[in-house]
Image (cartoon, rainbow, N blue to C red):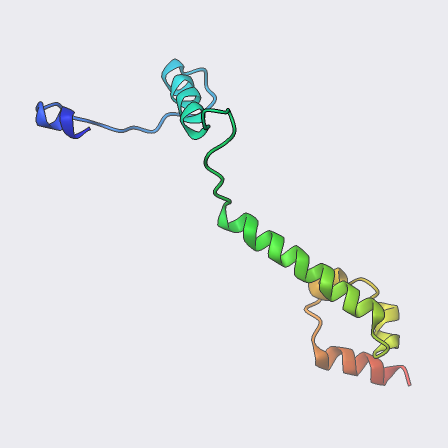
Length: 106
């Protein structure tokens, strides 16, 4: 790009709709994939999007939470109402609500 600018040529970028049978875009896609691959054909660039990392951490946390919820001997009555933590999560279950539910069933 600097060489082109030094030769007094202008460079302009524009958005092109992807997967729209645009020959230039398709060629750019192929060249990008080729450049991202090593000589052995394996991908040389493996960056994971931040939202994928966050989702994986949340899922792991929920599995751990469910496991702890399943094996706790406390709040047994509350667990009969909410056996799955996903339900309590959608209700924004808090300690005070759990205590209230536990207390109302005695």
